[in-house]
Amino acid sequence: MLAGIALGLTKYFYSPPLLGKYRKYTLESAIVLIGFALNFHQIITVGSKGILQTAAGIIVLLIAGMLLSKLFRLEKKIASLINVGTCICGGSAIAAVSGVIDANDDEIAVSTGVVFILNAVALFVFPLIWMKMQLTPEVYGTWCALSIHDTSSVVGAASVNDISLQYATILKLTRTLWIIPLTIMYKFLYKTKSNSKFPYFIGLFLIASLLSTFLNFDFYKYIAQLGKQLMSPALFMVGYAINARTIKKTGGKSIAFGIMLWIISIILGLLIALNI
Figure (cartoon, rainbow, N blue to C red):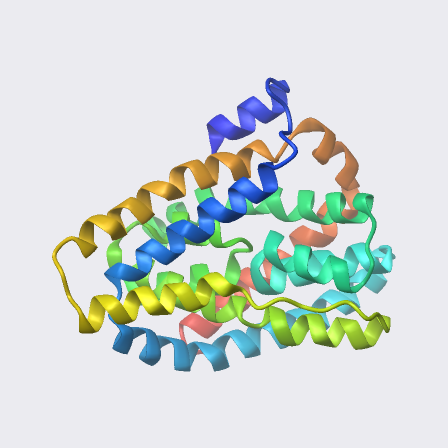
């Protein structure tokens, strides 16, 4: 990620037109392959509990985001996009909701910039906090899944051990499923006719886990390892998207709003993870 940020800031080979798609497909491929290392029964156990955990976090954050946007007097669509990016799954949620609310390129760029900057910070900060607080792997993985914006940084930050990675991956994908009802909600709020799309890679992830559980072969562990290795180029592309132009466009007010909302998300996610 640091290499990507450095390259993006120096503007060498700057902004390939399809960079967003490359990052999306690389990340989703990594998630699907990691599914071969997870037992399906574990996914059902953790995921069923995660539905309530993620729902509680999303509802509180949505309300907090709406109130904070009034305080910061932020433009409505930018506030909505930063809010869903924080509540659900970063860039993927922004991409889904932006089409529903008819956001323009500048609004998408600003909200994505805020989320990606904080996403990069999370990748480095969360493992440091984990070492200081000595959280259990289950709690730490849950916290990462509930409090970090984008799936790439959730998986990256939770990779301190296998148990944290498994919990974080399952819960993050559970959280991602909320894209569908949320886009429908915004469709009614903004009265548009756009359609939301199901995140198909989650279905492939479940199929991979089913194969690993009921048709267990030794080579699955190598496929899962390949998935972990694919996270490196995905994180590189996340960092590459953070450049001087994006930072300049975001503006202090948008970043301050994103930081305040993220602080709430961090505290709320930890409380939920600790069952407080």
